[in-house]
Amino acid sequence: MRRNPSILASLAVAILGSMLLTDAYAQGPCFPTSITVPAGQSRAALEQSERFGLWTFTVLSVKGNISKVDIQIYENALPTSGNIPDLYTVCASYPDPYGRPQELCSSEAPSGRIATAGSLSIKRATSGASGSITLDGGEYCVRPLAFGKGEVTISIQPPY
Image 1 (cartoon, one colour):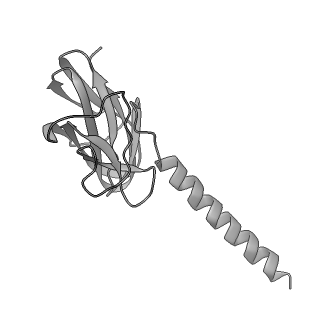
Image 2 (cartoon, helix red, strand yellow; image 1 turned 120 degrees about the vertical axis):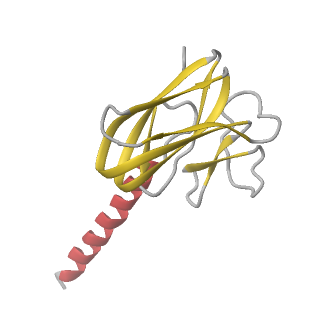
């Protein structure tokens, strides 16, 4: 009979732990200063700048062994959820063609077809590593993807 409370306690800890993990990965897509990406997965967020210039993406922290980070940037797109609600993983046109939830972060919906604005790779994902790309002023859906095991936190710095 003493085993039942310990089994229930273990089950409760497992459920709570998975909820906290999911909550930690569920980042708001509206203009974050940084985004955490688990290996083998992607995250999407919206970012904007009124100025033409250099956008810099910097590795803030690495947990585990991340070999590289690919960052794709799209115009006329919004962050769209994947299998987990409120976890934005892809960039898609508005409205999403598959009916997935999206976050409309500004007063205007994007118009026109989704298009690639650019991409870059950070080959050695170590703390402090960075990559840059020149973009026009505007609003972009940014989608980092990490390779390896663990997770990486990327800082998004548009021109100001």
